[in-house]
Amino acid sequence: MTTVPAKDDQEDIEATGGSGIADDPSEISLDPGAVLADSGVEELLATLDAELVGLAPVKTRIREIAALLLVEKLRAQVGLSAGPPSLHMSFTGNPGTGKTTIAMRMAEILHRLGYVRKGHVVAVTRDDLVGQYIGHTAPKTREVLKKAMGGVLFIDEAYYLYRPENERDYGQESIEILLQVMENQRDDLVVILAGYHDRMDRFFESNPGIRSRIAHHIDFPDYTLDELLAIARLMLDQMHYRLSVEAEAALVEYIELRRSQPSFANARSIRNALDRARLRQANRLVARRGQELTREELMTIEAQDIRASRVFGEEVQEPEAAVDDSAVRPS
Amino acid sequence: MRITQGTFSFLPDLTDDQIRAQIEYSLAQGWALSVEYTDDPHPRNTYWEMFGMPMFDLRDAAGVMAEIASARATFPDHYIKVNAFDSTHGVESLRLSFIVNRPEREPGFALVREEAAGRSIRYTVRSYAVDRPEGERYG
Image 1 (cartoon, rainbow over the protein chains, first blue to last red):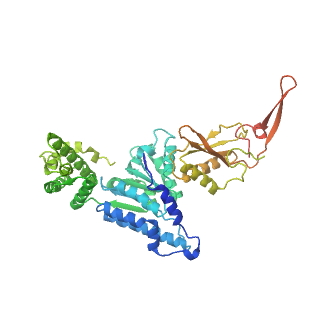
Image 2 (image 1 turned 60 degrees about the horizontal axis):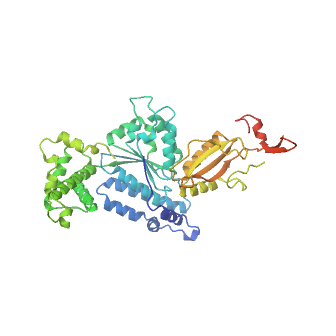
């Protein structure tokens, strides 16, 4: 289990304190723009657009949720409360489409809008929720839920919670506790379930209680070739590398080939490919002993670094899958 | 007789909002919280029964409040306290401990005199509540 603390914790406590309902009724502003500026969500959404490539349907839904919470805030100021909306979500999509990344961002957005109090993310998988013997599961699940309160509970590969082949599996108990808390303590935490599309569908079919308690089912589309290329550029930029012109062409070819192969994990495969290209670049530079290297050379990934990949070979199915085995498992 | 043990015990009972505020403060200090209960109100009874595990790595008071609510439902006629433990090196002890639930009626203490060697007398206190067996003392 990992807990990601909320960013700028202290500062935000003051910020939410200040952006609450105005004490003096004459000061109430019903201008959405003012509240938006006040919460700092605008810039968060802008960085979301800038840093995350593609994912149009996801971004649209996030904007809708942000707008809803904003309007709810304004309505509360004039006494039109409808109760907190249910914000439990399910993220479905293929590996490497950004589900975890978005979940982290989501916590921050919900925190800025004052929906969750602390804005941290507790990321768990089946192991963190389900116990090993009778009576172990309930305390374990409750402990995780308590840790997540005030923030977001992110359950990765949620479908593993339910194992239909074993009717005495403890996962069911965990699901029941989860459901109870999702229903009764809606304003204390937001639960985000994530997983691959088809398996999540099967999971929801066998657990209709969960499906009906999740208001937002967000599907993460696969990236297009252009988007993958943009992601690669963004990643290289962050690592202070750049591609030579030939290398860029090689990368396009690489992505095309890699996409048609099994266990392609979208952005994660790209990251792995770039990491291996860095290895080869380093090896190439070290091999040129006795020469002074320029800054330019240290930064540049050449076509040969990419073309050395096994993806360009003839028979590549199995070995590539082995090298890229992190692609099979979502992080 | 009202038991006065722990912080705030000379004040009127804390409301849930006040309890929540104290817990929020403790969490902000990085202290771990735990809930304990007992039906033996003797002042030297410092080791109460744990209600569930101590809660580490919490961010928000909601989790502790849920635990308090469940302790109150299980033991409505017991003393329940919340402890905040500071694990800082060199401290490693409770920083804050306060009662969040007490029995409806607290019968108080009897003064017990014991004849000791010579003509000296030793005194101690004994709660009327402990005349009855554990679990049946209140209510």
